Image 1 (cartoon, rainbow, N blue to C red):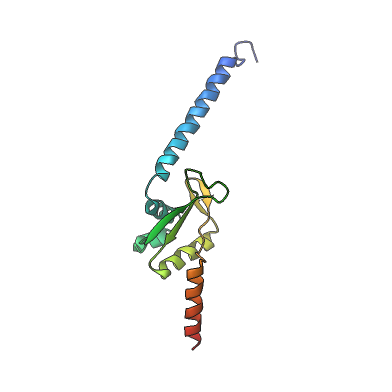
Image 2: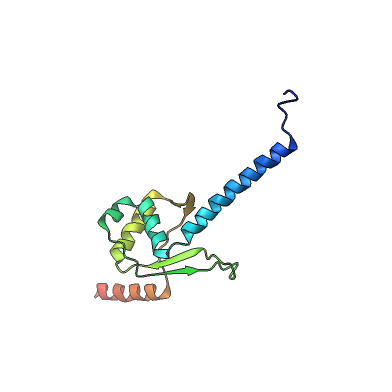
Length: 134
């Protein structure tokens, strides 16, 4: 490299500052998107990953909650969204499609969609299992 082509400290500082501004603006846009309603976030995830279910327009969210992380309970942005869907068939379709795809991406980051195995659901399953045996 010649003397003129060497990078000056001011240039490297400018490049670093531009990189920081770019990352900050990207994070700000992501925060804006995450500030949407919880139902909208779920609909976006389903729309990006499970196309055929969105065409049927069967996703109606009954209830959506945000749950804080167990490690940092005072964190301002909780990490998990718990969604109760009124129709079990819809939930099963979504989970089946996600299992086939093996991973789901939202905002460029991989996420997990899991079935809810709360105590109420497990009790209801046991009751139905007993009824189906009879």
